[in-house]
Amino acid sequence: MDLIYIDNNATTPTLPAVWEAMRPYLTDAYGNPASAHRAGRRARQALEDARERVAALLGAQPDEVIFTSGATEANNLAVFGLAGDPPGHVVASPIEHPSVAEPLRRLQEIGFRVAYLPADRTGGVRAEALAGLLRPETRLVTVMLANNETGAIQPIADCRLQIADWAMKSAICNLQSAIHCDAVQAVGRVPVHFGELGVTSLSLSAHKFHGPRGVGALLLRRGTKLRPLFFGGHQQHGRRPGTEPVALAVGLATALELAEREGAARRERVLALRRRLLDALRREAAPVVLNGPEEGGIPHTLNLSFPGCRADALLMVLDLAGVACSTGSACSSGSLLPSPVLKAMGVHDEVLHSAMRFSLSALLSEAEIDEAARRIAAAVRRLRATGD
Image 1: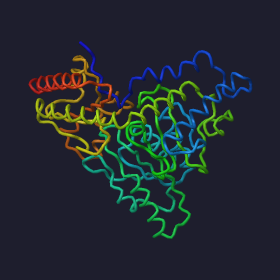
Image 2: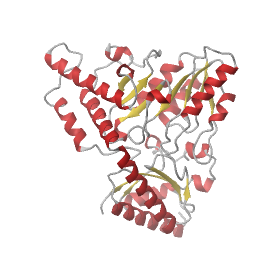
Image 3: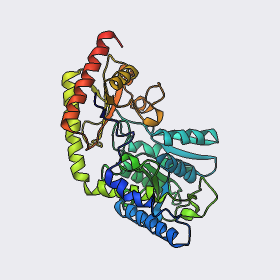
Image 4: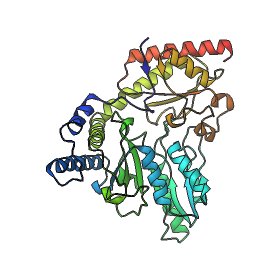
């Protein structure tokens, strides 16, 4: 049975063109970019070219791009690096990825207070509630751009305006709140412009848009003070020391360029595939509950509940049927606990415990979507019939 892969929010296959762009820096041009000899200078040139390409594509300056090992490191670097020492105050959305949510719990353990914005039934946070949560001691506001489970796009611009209005009304002209934005599920899928978002920092990961695993970036507004997580090197101005992975950085930049060049066509295709899958499942596996926006989110994500089925049982049946999907974030998929994101949205227990995430890519065919719908519907009917 052929595998149908609809778990692209967890990771995407690396495109052949990306591998070809990386290959020279894994074979011939393997010098350390910190070395002064010719091989090192060649590697340094490739690294800085990649940095400039990423910056240009995302509306940033080259010195605002910090390469990391991925989004988890980028998010940890932003949260801990911007929050500073306790005591302090942080405001966050309740739908953050574990790579933000768990560092926030650590901040609470060491003396920070963390307040959470409310979320609505479609998975969006209520930006208008931010003003009531801000304090003079607020160090950080962190709200993701697109949710990894529901695809809901968050009102970052409204949050930024709320902070500015609160500071003005409170006559606190020197409010030190930084704004961090986890944009991992948005970059490479929908247009993202760092400068226009107006945030302090923004994280991304290459393997979410057909780039290599093991590399991401934190965009950090020029002039922002950031405490590093690591020490022991001069690389990247000491903000993220360690020998830079030149081939991976080249792969990230190449995948991002391809995503930008093909972006409109990819989005149109994925949106059509999403509608096709949703319509088929509503027809063949009713009742189906959509968790997240019907329209307006990132088109790659479809979070559905199948009342009468347990999500863990459905996941196993679908795996045996050759359908790769998930019950939520890949970084917490080993847990059998209900999704914190859906809990924050206030969904009913039956909906909460039967939720599945199907995440698409433009590499899928209509035939694969139709076959996926057939297998999913058959699995749902079987489990409902047996009471599982």
